[in-house]
Structure formats: structure tokens, C-alpha cells
Amino acid sequence: MPATRPMDWAEFIRTSEWAQLSVRQKFWLQTYLAGNDRVLATQCAYGTTGPENTRIFSYEVRKHPAIQAALNRYWNRSPREILLRDLQANIKATKPGSMARIKAQALYAKLLAGGKIPKSKPSSSKKSKRRTR
Image 1: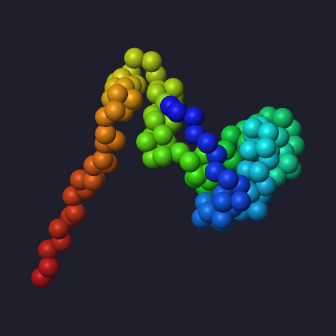
Image 2: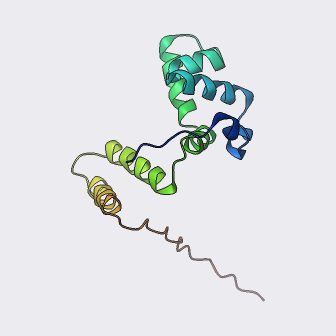
């Protein structure tokens, strides 16, 4: 994937993604971006104690949807880049040789070759019909 350039900080703090963060999340994000150390950012922003608790909580903070949205905006990631990153994570999380991994790898290869992003299929839930008297 091509390297993306970060957004100008003054511009970034005017985005809706920044505005939706809590004060601690903003502090965490600033610290994380300054040093690329999520454990240190977690200790500073949340005052966690104990290396194992801090490590686990730092992972949870990094994966929070609001933090993810802010990081994607800051790094100017396109929907395609976000999808490719998610697919990479899904491939890594699946069991080698499993059907899920094979399908994810095939989709990843297709997208890398210039294929279009698949549209999500609407769920086909059947509504129960009630009889009226």
C-alpha cells in the first residue's frame, strides 16, 4: 500500500473525527502520534498501572472506533486503504488453510490487482407476516 502523508495538525483538529474524541482520547492520540508508542500514550492519558494492564488497555484504546476513525482521517486513508488494512488483519487472524483465510486472500489479491471494492449485500431477513382479523 502506498505511504500516506499525515494531515496538517491545525486542519486535523478542526475535523469531526477530532471533535468526537473525549479529552483523554485526544491526549492519548496526541501522545501516540508524537512517539508512536501506544503503551506510553495509555499511561499518560489514562494513568494505568502495571505493565500488563497498560499493554492490554492500550490495545483496546487503539482499536476503539473513534480512535480508528481519527487515525484514518489524520493519515488521509482512503476507503480502499482502510479495507485493505482490515483484510490484512482478518487474514492474519484466521487459521492457515481455512476457507475464511482462502476467501479473504482471494479478495485481497483481487483488490491489489485493481478490482473494485465489493458492495455489501443487504441482509435477507424474512419478515414474519401477522394475520389480521
